[in-house]
Length: 193
Image (tube, rainbow, N blue to C red):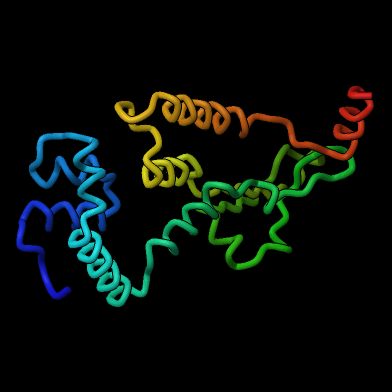
């Protein structure tokens, strides 16, 4: 296939799909009255499928970036955690440890701050180094993946909305959850027995 589709709405629909819109959103953006069934049916149209493939291959050739690559990166961000950057000492205190991180692991950090200061006065004074790290926003990555997968669309499926809400609650709780240590894990196993 060479070039745009004869039907301008079909062309607009194909462009919407290539931009990552859901079929429903691309259908409405192309000027059609919203209709989930018709949007889904139009995605199976051979001319539309061929045009989407053509547009994607042009974008991939131009940028060197594929949709799969973008989705893998979102997945990496969404499902990473602080365990790559922390270790727990024998007293159960978390310690930032970046020594074993690969460059790809370090790319998951949005911000690092290093602050040296003196705490206390006189003979009680001591030098302190405070290191803070902030990872990339996992929720945004999860939302982007969910959007690509058609999750969270209220008109589409109420269950996915509950999943999104549950993920947000888990994310909010996760940062305040205690870090598992060998002692805590052993205690939890003893309680199970």
